[in-house]
Image 1 (cartoon, one colour):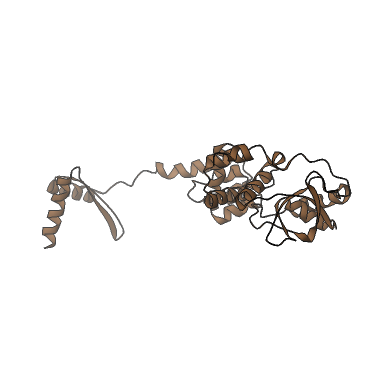
Image 2 (cartoon, one colour):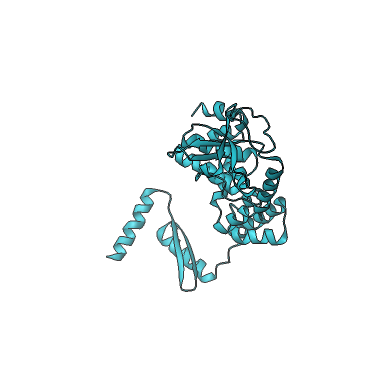
Length: 289
């Protein structure tokens, strides 16, 4: 675990080597570790932290590839099938290349295990800001659960602060409806973090979106909703309840609190020592017999 920051903290470009700009056709000679593979020989990575691909952005990349070719090779690894290679980084380029009608794409093949493949996928997507906050959180959670990472390990690997990792992971505590708003871009990560401790985060999220509140305004609204119930004064007890509390306190020699509403209520007897507790138990036992 201690060697991960030095191995991965330098970023994806340092890991896969310096890459020269490719020819506009997207076809390059096999040199410097770069080779060409037919698009049908490549498969998506099932563990890719990126789950959604914006269709408009994908179409823009497709048009760019038609015009200029693929400017950076995909990073892939061998699979159990000698003719199939799994994408580590570059799935969006692979998808766009197929849309653009390319039959081959430039790749760099690396022999890496599942753990390092996931590390590289997360690093590339985080550095490119390609993940939405929820996808980023799910990627971090996957590294923690499958490979025993700590938050500090992750911070060093991806080049972010530990607080960034912790705050991102906290988004996974939100209800599914709120997570959907984050994934869909209706709420930013900053908005979503203000909802984590809210009593009703789903309702608050709807209000934030409908009113178009800023993160600061959302935070103020969340704090107001959270604090307001705490300042609610308890209802005054009637004279009969107060008299009964006093009568029970005198009989037991202990502090007694009584509250009731409708057909039910609560009787609270406070004791300070175990001897006082034994005395209460003895009296209740005798009364039951």
